[in-house]
Amino acid sequence: MRQRQAERQARRAREFKAFVAGAAGRLLHSATLLTAEAPEDNPRALRLLTLSLAHTYAGWDRMRGEDPYDHARQYLASRFARGAWHQRGGLLGGRSRAVGPLAALGPQERLVLVLRLYEGVAEEQTAALLGLPVERVRTICDRATATLLHPPRGPAPTVRGAKVAPS
Image 1 (cartoon, one colour):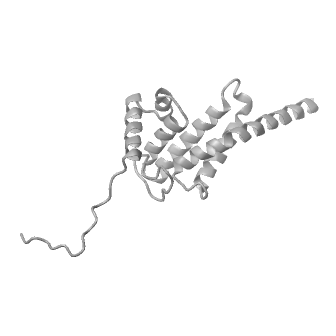
Image 2 (spheres, rainbow, N blue to C red; image 1 turned 120 degrees about the vertical axis):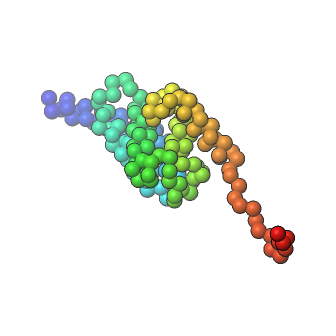
Image 3 (tube, rainbow, N blue to C red; image 1 turned 90 degrees about the vertical axis):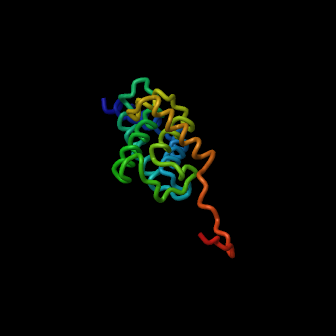
């Protein structure tokens, strides 16, 4: 009995180790995009990844045909959303300390964009995961894409030595 249990645990550990070897890099990249941290300095993304993998490992035996990557990605996204909500005054606010390629976007925009474009999650699945209508997910994704493709311009440069016309 003990030997069978030990064999099962060893098999579970091998399967999970193989899963992590294949999925951790992509999940870490997703987490880094979500947190808008620099890839070489991403403690929040590493924490998200660790929590997601720990949660996936805890439910490994109960998955029964579920995709472990999908399970880990869903937990990562929901954990990010919950953390963004509590730490930064909601998913709609807080662009502070963002330095990554998606730094111009708010947390909700980053979350939708990463799920839709980087992870390839369908609009309907993204909407269900976030508890939003499909049309709202589409609008957020379109706005975030437009912001990245056409970033807002800063203020016009001041011209030195220009004379101001009297009023």
